[in-house]
Image (cartoon, rainbow, N blue to C red; front, side):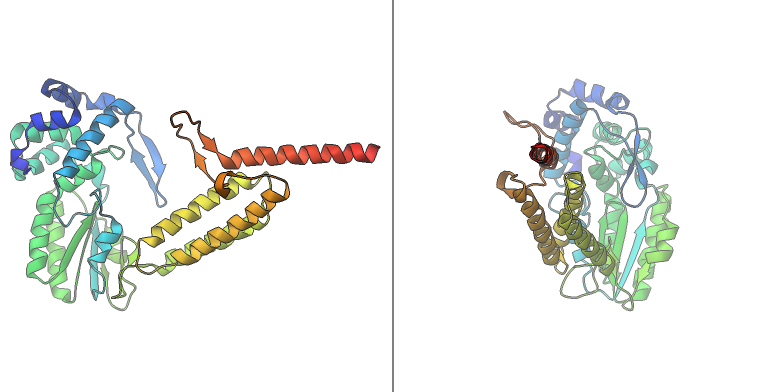
Length: 365
């Protein structure tokens, strides 16, 4: 379904609402959000606007509708089904020069009026553009925490993606975008700089600002550097690779995990489980690249698990399928939530207390 074909009736049907209820829901979006909180993303604190459960369920249905109808440019990768930072980086593998630009505070800088204007540029009908702009924004910005925030950003940048992708093709460059990160690559420095100038002028026209700090640090990466796209190395023609810095960080965590497993106790078991979850996250991340330390990380995970299981068996404890680290707080039908590290740690302390009591009794006799 093309933008000009979408009516409020289609959105209401997708969300399981009547048209009147859709408009009422859109006009009262402010009441759908919990108080804003700051959340650390590994680099900085970001403002997150969490939704209450009922409106979140409705917006998830709208998200599925938008995804099913592919309402974004083919160059968009963030917030798109079956796409990721790795598919975005794959476009630029082996390129001699890589240019990147990042928008400062992108989500909160997109007003409802600006969103409506972009929707109209895409030929959405007036009523459809109005209700979508109301659903997409909160406090006159795109909320981070909404199921449709990624869709909102992709639709907002759709006209710009079309312009830049067309220009990149004529200049023999490769172009892609992941959320608010714009990336293009090629062998001709002059052509890349032309695209950079056009992008910066268009971003300014949208009322947004380029992140000058990131531009100075990584605005242009040449063949003399390790070229990184979204933190992923694209220097090798054979495919995407985990960067040297990330590989070093992941392997260092793996060594710490194995050392912690060797000396694990009842009091440290839960902390070791947290460390294992972090290391497993690194393994799943590294698996997405063509080149990386995923296999080595898996070996470190298995080595640490063997040490923990050996200690548990020594005191007569066991875990279901030897998965001592499982934590699942989501209760399923007829099944309570599961926290294996906590259960095993408590059982371990109980066993030690019993053994200590027996020793005291034996000594007294």
